[in-house]
Length: 282
Image 1 (cartoon, helix red, strand yellow):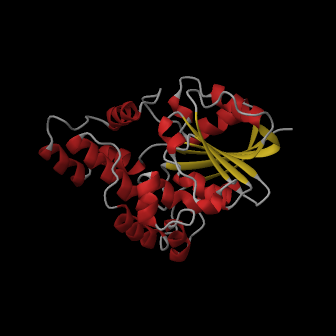
Image 2 (cartoon, rainbow, N blue to C red):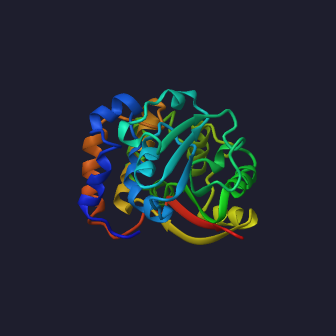
């Protein structure tokens, strides 16, 4: 990961022409992890004003807005019908579109997009090669596909392996609920996300899938910074253990500023978040 200045992270607190609080009311709460990964994801996408980009599995649409600001057109596609109700900021009219599809990989135009962002989508179906074929069809020759995917929680895995005191404290607090192993935790987490897997794809797994699907992998990086990723992993673990929620939205602004400040001073990468960039073979 390239070290970022704190100012770089602050730029991602505005969405379209809207300040953070106004954006919440229109687009829901943002994903803290993805916002911390944003500078690295945008670097990997290598956007330009004349390029069209597809945000495949766009969720609440926060990131699609960032893409639209940097490209000719950004299209956010997701299975959630909520996105069809999203209002387009006036400064992005004609540059931003959201589409709800029951099968997002179907109905996409051939050789249309210069860039595709696929964030946390490959594990969602039993055979991810179906998605990869759709990406291949809808990308222009030489276009880039950027796959962003969690590849595990090294901090939690190491805590189980090393018998970390923090894990012992949680065992005492939740003796009947804590998972006996990291593999059990991973399976429960994936089940809560509704994925087709009960483990995590590795960065190598993702690269192999892309190579088999007609892409050439041109780069892999890990993000966010290690300290931020570790804190988010523990926060998710403890919240999921205590009340069954695998995703939380409380305190975004305070958490983002704290973790962004820390990330700007941390040269190490969190190996649980992979960003794999692949070019469509001509």
